[in-house]
Length: 304
Image (tube, rainbow, N blue to C red; front, top):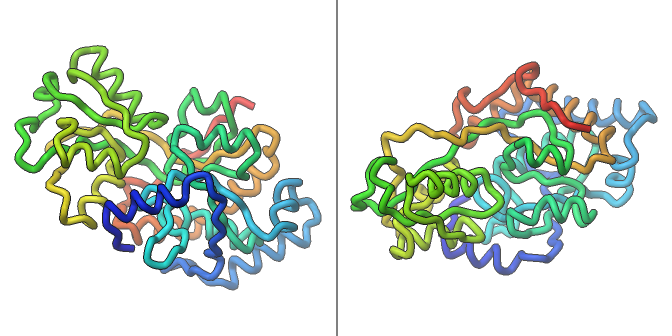
């Protein structure tokens, strides 16, 4: 899964606005109970004769289409293999196995446009580390919680900005459409930072800090840690100690009209929580039980 920052930029540039097919149905999740369990669940779903209209449509065309901003390690194309991979992909792949969906394809777009792509019916689902927020619940339905996440502050290794309090004179980069951008804007309003600069994707955001265009970045903690571990050319670090403020619950989005499909996805997801499969997927990405939310506490209260 190793990939350099420049590779991420190239992959995002090449993938933007293209519907690129990539079968991940043959990927196996380390630690999953067994293929037999997934096949059995899919068979039960098929034999019930009560599948949702969207699930039937997806099966008829042979794949589900998702929106992604191509950000590692959640949902991205590996530039070496051209395979769609990542944490959210592995979770969705297991859900697809259990529902009898053979393939996942992705439409790469800016993070801020993913729900627009969904509601324009260009994709069936958004699955790319998206926070479940009150604002987004007014736009679409969200699954139960997949895992939790929080922000990190990234600075140059030798930066004078070493604490949140020191950021009052700093220019801070953030990615529009994310909870971290909203947090950065709030910091600017209350004087915690000097200004906020927008960058459309994770790669350009990290490059901006590395080249001194901005003093720091507020971004996804999992993404930041992964990026720094994979790209030794980045002279960057995570601010520490630092207590995340924008901790949130991650899920996938579907349209209001696809409530029956949402229930099918949630059924598979919650089975994964109960049989241990979801936790094993999280562990594959170095995540502890702190990122896991069980069935009952992970219920999402949709507005429709």
